[in-house]
Image 1: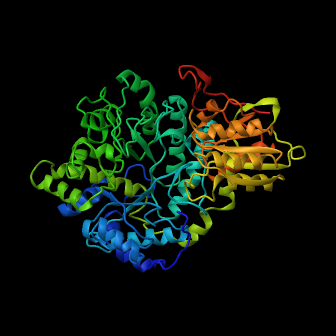
Image 2: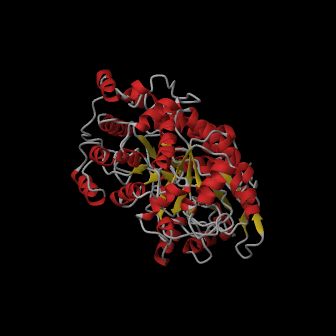
Image 3: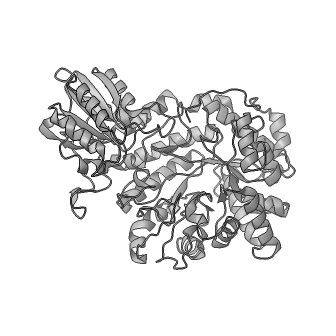
Amino acid sequence: MHDTGTGSTGNTAQPSRRTVLAATAGVTAALAAAGPAHAAAPDDSRLRALVSRMTLEEKVGQLFVMRVYGHSATAPDQADIDANLKEIGVRTAAELLAKYRVGGIIYFAWAHNTREPHQIADLSNGIQRASLELPRGLPVLISTDQEHGIVARVGKPATLFPGAMAVGAGRSRSDARTLGRIAGAELRAMGIRQDYSPVADVNVNPANPVIGVRSFGADPRAVSALVAAEVAGYQGSGVAATAKHFPGHGDTNVDSHTGFPTITHSRELWEKLDAPPFRAAIAAGIDSIMTAHLMVPALDDSGDPATLSRPILTGILRERLGYDGVVVTDSLGMEGVRSKYGDARVPVLALKAGVDQLLNPPDLDLAWNAVLTAVREGELTEARLDASILRVLRLKSKLGLFRSPYVGQGGVDRTVGTRAHLAAADRIAERTTTLLVNEGRLLPLSRRRYPRVLVVGADPASPSGTTGPPTGVLAGALNELGFTATALSTGTAPSAATIAKAIAAARDADAVVAATYNVTAGSTQKALVEQLVATGRPVVAVAIRNPYDVAQLPTAQVCLAAYSWTDVELRSAARVIAGRVKPRGKLPVPVQRADDPEQVLYPVGYGLSY
């Protein structure tokens, strides 16, 4: 994600109109009457005609969304060619499309797909060209996880917004809609038409290791409103939003990437707590919904993960909730979906359950052939595949991919990371920072009384291509605001020697800002803050991930919740500390007492100002 070099992409030239028309002939002709990108009802007869002309192998391919390494569709770096050969058996994205005819490709920073916006646009164009030049070629639905906050695959100079829990603290549907509108416009300009966001999970478990600040909060009504607003923003910009992770991932203490979680909610509790945001997303016209790799016995007692559960995906999502859009799995490489069945059975069972898109299988050749065999042997009917392919093609048509599959570099320059967009992100962030403790009205911090500020604390890796490290970003922002700030990284588990170094540095400062990251009762971060307070210097604790840190830091004079350690949220926290803006955020989740988790220390809606 930090690699911003462009280099040669091998497909940098913008395709001419002649090339576009030649590549899409036969497809666009069949869809000439399908209407504009946002047509409410694509012409199914023409889409069905496309499906009828596909070979079985092409149909199977349309169901898969696959990763591929490289910054270019045809000329990636040698290391990415080697990774592709090892994992997929092809050299490039173009070869992937030719061999498997996949319907979608997902971008990752670690796969070197997202170096910078112009390269991303070139890669998208190269992928579309490679697919459309094939016999009966179809446009590709390019997707990514751009949740903002701690999960974002496209980094600077694209606009990066506060994450969901921060937006939940801001409580503004208008801000959520603006976020979706701007983020969607930037993704579309780079050729990305499907975003795996927003997170519709209601996070009621402080120990949740995988959702946490990726959720808007713990109140299903508030989460529902913000989900619907963000969906409207994204889809108004011509990008498919994706509500995830159905039927709800907010109350688990197991990460489905590495284990198989179980949600023990009763059916009644699920209806009240987990279902409302997905209902709201469906009412807002959500284009796609992502499944969760977890078990909910109250909804299906078979022991299968929801991704493979027909009672959940067809019985509840399709039939009870009335959803007929695209259903995409979470990554099929995650342990939560692989633990019960082998990788060859998972895609077949997912299709039988009601899934339309099979995301990122660990072994594409195995998964692709397993689906092909299941159809040839009668376990899956070709009509079952056709139903999913039709949903995917409807979405591609709605997004304008048949009519206009390519993007221009001028659109990147006009749209991505513009001054107006960056300013909007800062304004939204300023409404999210939450002040929980302000003893003696220390904030706003006086530059005259406390000119020298030491910034210490955790420096987790930058989550989304932002500047980082957090202590440096905070110190830099405070310097711009008139303080003389220095940064000292102490890490998430500072040693006694590191703490001693911080204490010595604090004696030369007038005040200390401590960035904390998921503090626990036995954490040495807690010891660091306590010893800093003991120096007599004022200490401002800034929780840069979960807001629950405040319960472990009873001695800190000031506690702020920033909800993430991206630049936009850290700059907002600095402005609140300096008094440039007043804190306006309110807790979207309750914070329990550290010594008695049954008791609430700070309820939902709590937040101070000055």
